[in-house]
Length: 266
Image 1: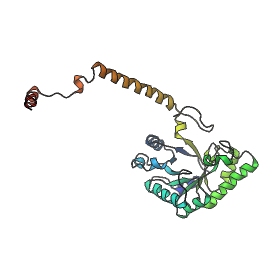
Image 2: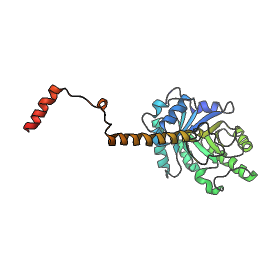
Image 3: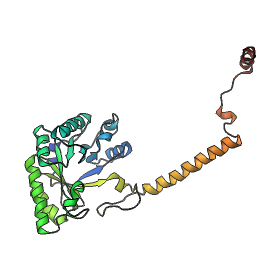
Image 4: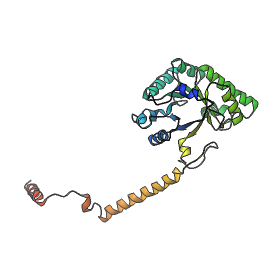
C-alpha cells in the first residue's frame, strides 16, 4: 500500500470530525478523475481494481474492493477474492454477505465495510427499493444490524436510504465509520455513484443522487458525430477521393521501373 494512502486507523480517527467523500467508480477514467479530485474513498469492482494500471492512475484514495452479493458463496470464496483484491491494491473490501463471513474476513485481518438500511440484494425483505427505518420498529432493526456488524468486526458500514435523524443517532452510537447513501449528513461520509454525479445515463436517478454534469447528452452528441464521420469516410471511398496522394507513400521512378521489369519476367 502506498504510504500516502489513508489507513483504516486514519479514517476512524476522522469519525465525527469531518465528512468524508466516497464514489463508486467503474472505469479507469472515473478512477483517475476521482484521485485528482481528492475524493477520500472509492468503491471499485474487482475487474477494474485488478487492472495493472489502476493504482498507477489512482494512487491516492482509500479503495474498497467490491465483493458483490451472489458472486461468491462460501467463506473460502470470499477469503480468496478478498486477499486477491488486497494484493491488487485495495485497502478494504465491501461485504454484504452473512455476519459469519464478515467475521471470518475480519479474523484474517481483512478490513470490511458492511451494509445496513436498504440493501439492494435483500430488498425483498424490506419492501423493495424503499426507505428503511421510517418506523420505530424498522429503525431499531437498522440499529441492531449496525451493532451486529460492529460485533462481527467490520470497521465501516454503508447506511442506505434511512431517515437522516435515525442515521445520525445510529452514527453517534457506533464505533463504525457510517457511510451515508441517501441517509443525510449526520454520518461520517457521503457516498454517490460516479455515473450519477456525471449524468451518464438516461431515465431514473435515485432521489439521493445529485447530477453535476450531463455526460449522457455529450455521449449522444459524440455518437451522432461518429456516425456522420463513418458515413463521410464511406462516401469518400465510393467517390474515389480517399485515399488521396497525401495518404500514400511514394516510390521513386528509378526503383519502380526495375520492379515492374522483374514482374514482367515472372
